[in-house]
Picture 1 (cartoon, rainbow, N blue to C red):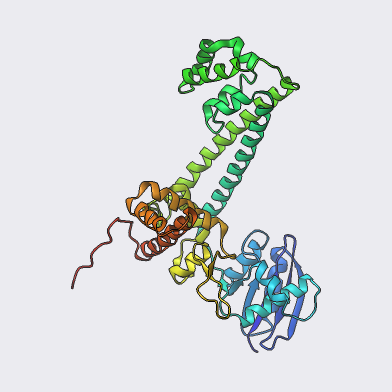
Picture 2: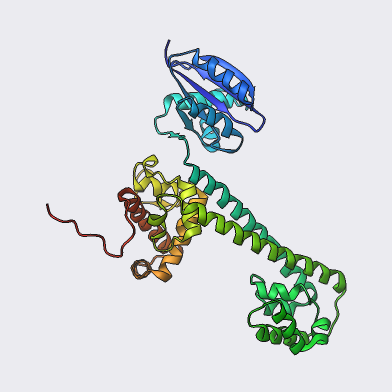
Amino acid sequence: MAPIWAGIDAGKTHHHCVAIDESGRRLLSRRVANDESELLELLADVLALGDEATWGIDLADGGAALVIAILLNHDQPVLYLSGRAIHRASEGYRGEGKTDARDAAVIADQARIRRDLHPLRTGDETVIDLKFLTGRRMDLVADRTRTVNRLRAQLTGIFPGLERALDLTNTAPLTLLTGYQTPASLRRIGCKRLETWLRNRKVRSADQLAEKAVRAAELQHTSLPGEKLTAQMVHTLAKEVMDLNQQVAEIDKLIEARFRQHHHFEVITSMPGLGVILGAEFLAATGGDMAAFGTSDRLAGFGGVAPAPRDSGKISGNLRRPQRYNRKLQRVLYTSALFSIRRCEESRRFYERKRAEGKRHTQAVLALARRCVNVMWALLRDGRCYQPAPPVPVAA
């Protein structure tokens, strides 16, 4: 028997698998439930068709997590193809229809002919936990941003002066809005009693906040339509934002505790601009195994901080922003580069040099992020923490 290739078009409840031989002839086409017993039966049937099998799949997690775990636990090589790559590759095959069986056949054939596909590996438990935790944190932060925006819109509808005066991302203004939302209520309580009310709730700089709120109330004596109901909504939204702040703080503690258990914690957090949260997101996005990328150039391309060439005919030397990259990793690299400009003298000089060369702010930050990828790559390769001056090699 000869080697075979099996493509899996993954879904939430069912998968479709197509197996082909080295000539591309279809040997098996089956729809299976996302259930362990059926997946094990599929594995046995595919292995019965050839000496060895190579698997391709279009998802790396989510609904495909079970089938990937089963294949890796049975020492099966699994290659990953993105949905975009499959869509573009399918245009080169005969026919225009789209079915799960056709997609699975394209995946199998691409796994057969391509040599640059990314192999999936059994993930480190710490990295997997950080991936879930950082994903949950991003959801909470997005929910908080949406809630703060709704709060600003509601408060602007009845009391625009107070909305301009307060920073609704801080706890103290939110505490104020849980008790007082209208100009009339703030004027009635007055500055001194409002300060006492805030101090009883352990608000810092209660005197300044009370003075600011009452001053805004003195500038508006008009009661707007729907003020009573909107004030209740402002109260509710302020409590929701405070609750989300608490949830984010709790998950930050979980992320730090889990991240500290990883052997690359000291190396990653030593890098300027990469704190605990961004460092954990970097680890979750890359897996922490630099051998999976091969070179720092591939890591930079995966993170979207390496420009892609756009040459044609006599036109050469054109560079453009890449379109295929990991958005989460790019955000981590870009944000950490911004932070390093403020906190690291070497990064600030590099940024200023790029600006002096005529680059825009975003281009200069991306150039710094690209440089930081090289540094991070070397640190993880050598297992050493960042130092402003690299160590001098000692002659033998």
